[in-house]
Length: 87
Image (tube, rainbow, N blue to C red; front, top):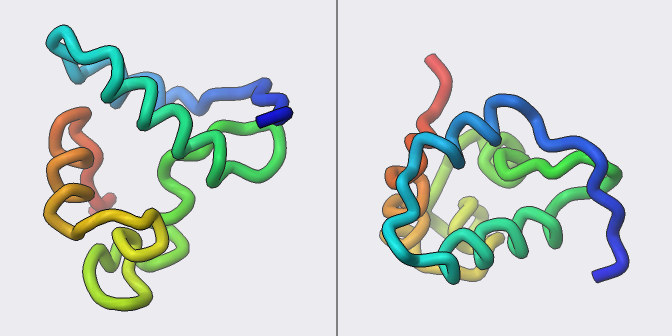
């Protein structure tokens, strides 16, 4: 993709480490690929789309639509590594 990622935020690494990735390297690979596509600049930012949509997952302007996936798929992907809306 010809993008240089120099920084992965601590909160992102912590969320990725909490999830055991039980034998499914493809899942991790897909998550990283999407994050690289959506990141602008040298920082890998998995949370960017969620923040841009004010954590709205569904609907035509929700995070799931922007990521090109079903709302339930996004919810499942968020649950696995423990990504939750900040209090």
